[in-house]
Every structure is written in C-alpha cells, then in structure tokens.
Image (cartoon, rainbow, N blue to C red; front, side):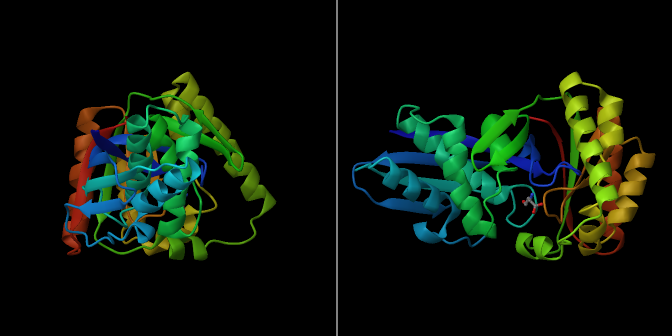
Length: 297
Ligand code: HSE
C-alpha cells in the first residue's frame, strides 16, 4: 500500500501569535510518497538536493514514524520518498511539512486510526528534532488546513479557525537564520504594557479571522515583542514592510522564525506588485531571493 501526498508550506506566528497561530498556503509544497512495508524497517529517501539526513533517527519524518510504529506496536514498516520544494531553513515550515506529511500518510495507510490531534502529537517529535522545541504552530495548519490556533500543546488543544480569501506573498532571502538562534535572542521578560498590547492584537486577529473582518485583520497584524528583536537578523526587513504597506498590503511580518517575510493582500494585483518590489529590494543589494504568491490553503 502506498500514498502520494502534497504537503503545504506554513506561516507560523502570523505576526503577533508567537507559537500559537499559523496558516497553510498553496505554494510552495513538498511531495511525499509513503509506503507501508512488511518488514519493520523505516527507510527515508530524499529526491531533492538539500542534503538532509536519511538515517531515520536523524530525519524529521523518520522520528515521527518511529514513534508511530512504537506506540501502535506495529510489525510493519514504512518507506518514505520526499521531494522537498519548501527550502529547509526558510521559515516556511519545511521541517513541519516532512513531519506532518509522514504522520498524515502513515495514518491513511493504517486506515485512519489516529485523530488530527494525535497526528499533531506525533508530528511534534519531528519539530523537536529539527529545532529542539515541541512547537505546533506550523504542524497544526499543515494537518488541519487554513488558519489554526494552538491553544496549548500539553495537552494538545488545536482550534481550527477559518480560511479567509486572501493572498499571501512570501519572500525568502538567501540568508541563514536558525530557529534555535532566533529563539535564543528573544527577551526572557516582557513589559506588562507590551503584553497587553500583544494580547489585544491576538484577540483582534482571531476575531477578524472568524468574522472575516479584513480591516480588523489588517490592524491586528502588529507585534511589539518578537519582531523588534528578530527583525535585525533579516536584511531590509523594515524597508520591505514599509513598501508593502504603501503598495496596499493589509499587514505582515516575519514568517515563523525567518528569514522569510510574508504579507497579506486582498487583490491579486496588489500581491503581484508586492512580490515584484520584494524581489527588486533584494536584487539591489545582491541577495538572491525566492518569492511566492499564494492563497491561504
Ligand atoms: N513559532 C516558532 C518560532 C516557529 O517563531 O520560533 C518556528 O518555525
């Protein structure tokens, strides 16, 4: 038995919702084939050129399948072929896609015996391997689709929100930002007044998403805690944000832990203008970049 799946990229945090909000997008996506085998081995093959480890204990999809195999006392094994298009280290949920795809694929082959919450539980082992943290803000939208709220990870409590009809423009400049470093530099304490502003924004954003109130979504996309610290790791962040807003973006910010930057827009034309601007800002300083225009998925 085998299954072929497409696994979407995801934008974690959605500016103010650090570690709790995320959305799945159409582009880019990974292609995976998961096979249920008679022998208990777990075999991982990469048909891409990112040089990711194929030893299952050291591979994001591999550890997820090891946990599924052990917890469910399976005598069967899995063979997974991964063709990544979501670049590792882009901040677009590359590791989450491999982890969630493995859990999702295995579950279908096993006759859908696991709930979505259980899939999130298993996929988080992959995130732990990739970044040292069991965060689910990329995994949850990857599994549920649309925009999700991770109300908590212990116990796992995921609230699927909705899928507003908006364009997502993402630029991935070719600079390296490791999630572990981008977490390390964050402040350990925050001011009470900043916390109040932040939870006002999060509540506004969630309300805007649920009521499909686009202007409310726009004015809630503000982050007074994480972005001021992390944006220094991303060249031209301020310029791209300012110019995007001037071109009509609703708002946006760092995608996950970066270096990708994302913006939301209502119209295709606005999205295309923003995408062109992003590319030329990086071209001008000689940094190669990849730009994606997508929809929330
Ligand atoms: N919420 C996580 C972070 C996402 O911002 O560190 C990492 O992909």
